[in-house]
Image 1 (cartoon, rainbow, N blue to C red):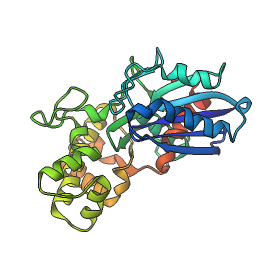
Image 2 (image 1 turned 60 degrees about the vertical axis):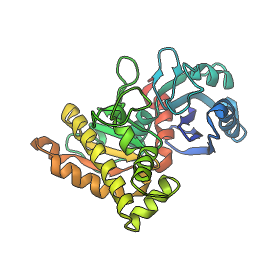
Image 3 (image 1 turned 60 degrees about the horizontal axis):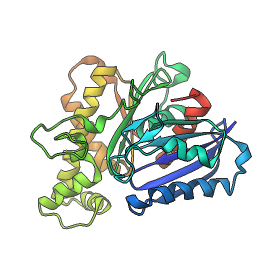
Image 4 (image 1 turned 90 degrees about the vertical axis):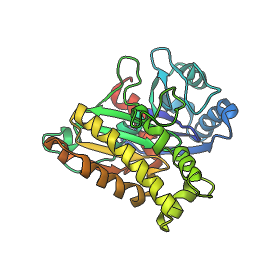
Length: 308
């Protein structure tokens, strides 16, 4: 069985043909040029794969999408794609490969499952096949998302939206969040949130990539923006770890790609605030699969799980 994997993010769409052993037979990625182009972008990434891998070789479709989402109805309402509200994503993909099953989960849920399946950690005592028994995957990028894999199964919750760690409130007096909450992790630790704060405090750069470069160079406001983000993420990580007794947290996404300027203060903040003894074994690492983690996870929805 070879499957079409699709990863729907706030700034780009990606797709791949993935074999049962995890080999990517073809891969493509297309930037999202404004929310109004989402439908065209989806069609383009699928077409690029079916131009390279014959459609009759593709036995199913796995898709990870930014949320919120409704897997039961196959619909999505990504916060950062306002033109998609209650969008019938499963039906749209089903039309591209008629008769194939389509499995849907959150993009960060797929990132977590992909890391569990094809990447991740060294041996964990008593873990299945040496893998983490309880893992949180986080995507820190345009937004902040998360997904849980517990004993090898993605935990999606009754509505399919478990793992929305970016919408834990960490600053009750903070900024309004696009989700409707206040002071969410996403308002502080997402790329746009960091840039907004830095600009309000005198930084004059253009975007999150420039902010990361300035932080590496020691610009005090840029450094502080990453420290604030790390503090918010640490609070969310420790909250989730206390609830789910996590072995591992794996962090991906564009902001996470900044490397030590995020991970060093993140680990320091976790170390300062860890109280309960069982939390001290927690490992926090960058994704080992980079931009492919979500695609591997989307494929795994079909190849390993048989459904989300």
